[in-house]
Amino acid sequence: QVQLVESGGGSVQAGGSLRLSCTASGRTFSSYAMGWFRQAPGKEREFVAAINWSGRSTNYADSVKGRFTISRDNARNTVLLQMNSLKSEDTAVYFCATRNSRLSSTYVGEYTYWGQGTQVTVSS
Image (cartoon, rainbow, N blue to C red; front, side, top):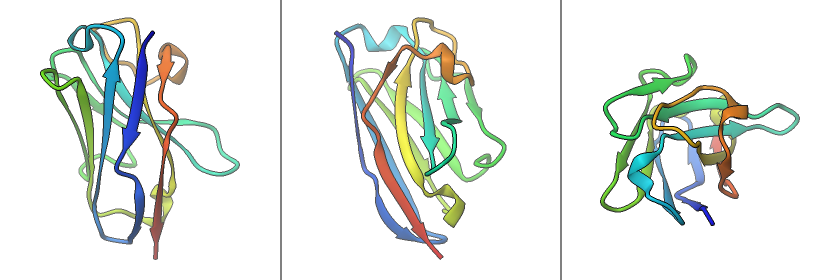
């Protein structure tokens, strides 16, 4: 059974930084793409960033490009999301997800396994 556990969320002032971590178990981590998504109150879940199986290919939502960086450590079964220059509109629950493919995707529906989420609150 695939399990994803996020950590690293919290409260920060605008302009600050946070680093989210997601640790996976239950299958060979290095064979599959990973993604980060977020959901703000009253809004649909949206794509943030994704990374392919090797880490050589990444995708970002336009709203976070240049501020967020996704990376993975296949030896530690971990995917990271470094978030810099945070804005109040980044406030949301952030979810880690994985899909049954080596290739990354920006679509919520193409991810099969999800973590429980971690809250990120940015105050202005």
